[in-house]
Image (cartoon, rainbow, N blue to C red; front, side, top):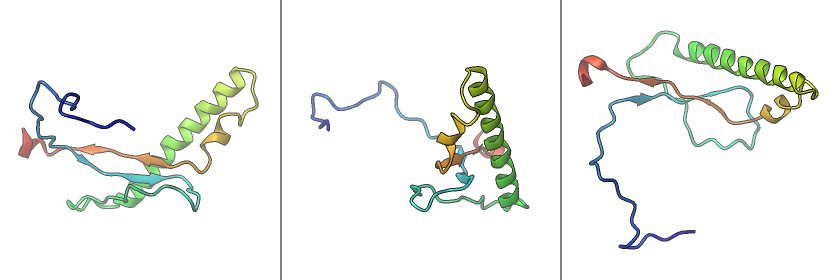
Length: 106
């Protein structure tokens, strides 16, 4: 474990810029009981109709697409179809779309 001192503090030659984006974390897929849960489900305060259902549907479609590509890759490499997808099961899959209010933040 490294320790920062006056001689080796991390620094940037540029002042930090305010990040006007919003992050909406959403857990997708089945999770094990011992899954690390450091990201809460975030629902926008703006009140988007059907947010939970849309996020679940979008996240599950993306998750299914990744599984399909992983299976195709495994077969293409001469491996068993589930060689990669077995590693995805019970993982902490997180969808994190970004939002910005362009009228407010330019």
